[in-house]
Image 1 (cartoon, rainbow, N blue to C red):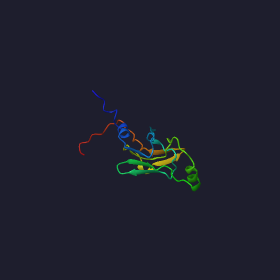
Image 2: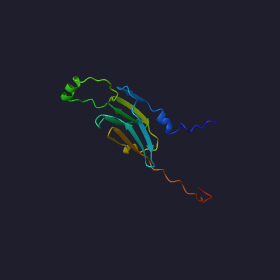
Image 3: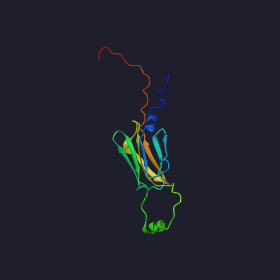
Image 4: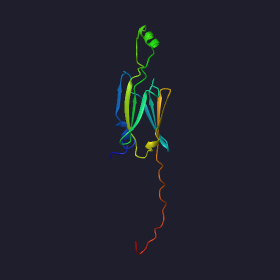
Length: 145
């Protein structure tokens, strides 16, 4: 008998989250999904992207949408230098990507935070506290409700 819980939450959401990557011949942005007792943490590689290049949005149905256009702004001096350069290999592209992640139901969507530093986007999604289980007790029985 097959165990159907392997692809249950959160794995189902991870494997079926759509990923779109364009602009670079390299592999798509790598992502780590960590879960602590108080939050879900997503770490996504966004090399060459700054905070103005990355967009994180909460969409309908508890879905986080992450987009990055990559930093493509160049100064006139940089453009002049590029005209004088011969490229032999270009594998470190700063292409754009888009990714959507379906969040579990027990999150505080109004408290999501995102931070980009050293080419890594970190999205912290706090979880709702789990209510304590009711303690066993005796229920009084009466003759009328």
